[in-house]
Length: 542
Image (cartoon, rainbow, N blue to C red; front, side, top):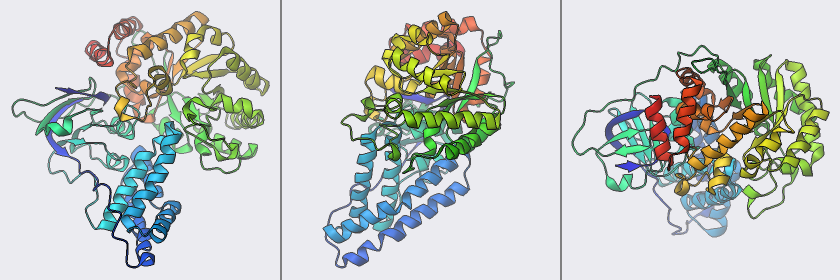
């Protein structure tokens, strides 16, 4: 019996197919006889990879399509090709080695930024491995053609490989690396494929068959041959579109969005509104600050599908993992603990005021019921400062994100100065457990089922009940139907997630009473490990 972090629920079993790994580090020699000709091989190779990824994107849809298109753009990035070409001509490197080293410098920069930007490292490495394989004339790494329904096992899955999976052929996914917020996890949930990540030793065990439980994180190597079986498909569509427990407690089921296409997908999935609109996603590549008019237009495009529905807009979560060039951030030794979120807003109040004006304009233009919240708030004073600024701009409801343990510890006082809070479980887990959420080696620490994290959330939920004000969750934890029930039992009154999880969570909430979810939450809180919490809750809710 092996164990990891269950990231997509369901129990399935079948024969193992190991995903081909990259060829590895190409040799640095011998030097090319004609460096100019060698350098000219790189551009066409990158274009072939980009064309292949774009072709696969056309056959995909939803998140998979978006991910393949993004990876194709990276493959076609002229800066990567140019840097590799320069390494051929200046260091006399073979083309494959030059691509490998150029990609490494890009990956190092993203990894140092942390958070969202670090999530792109796997994309860069995937593009690198595909281009290197093309230049060496060998088969590209990735998922082989499956002849029968199988359990895929890999060191890690490239995002483009995960996006192209056929749920009819893939019974389950098991990886040695990765974490709860990795692309593999997010897309496995979107495709409805059971998945367990961070399973140490699974490749060395060389199993012929596996029994995988994506809810509990267990991976069993059977002692004798078994009959393969697929996960049962949950009746996720049996939801009336109104988030409630079976006895009528209202729990809003909302969407996380960052662009108009996300808003469209959320509406189609039945979202009751938006719990997190990530405004900075529109400006990650902007070299100059967008004007108020440009911002208003961009925001209105996202708000328009939600006329009359509640939308919570997060002000720019700039810095660290999402550096915005127009803010000219200074280099920092530890960006995750540096000037980010509301700390940037307090340094650049003019930028915040222009954004608030654009948000107000977009709300008036679209008729959406808009609230705002600030990211990375750590103190009551910061919360009060932001709320006063937002109210002065004409916004009635101002809140803050609780992503820092310090804010959770003073939640009662924070509720005294804001209208609501929203918990970002991804960062709150990272800071509570001191575990980088992009690092596979600590994935078991950075698990939303950690009892310490659940106890912090419970403190916030109780503070919300005392204040008579709402507390929501907008991290990946909200997308897990079982964990959603625990959160409701802890006092959380709204859950916001990616569009693919909305119906599953809405249906799961409707199966039990508020009191039963409280019992389930108590059982999770007294568990000693995330695995115990997950298994106990799974047993109580299934």
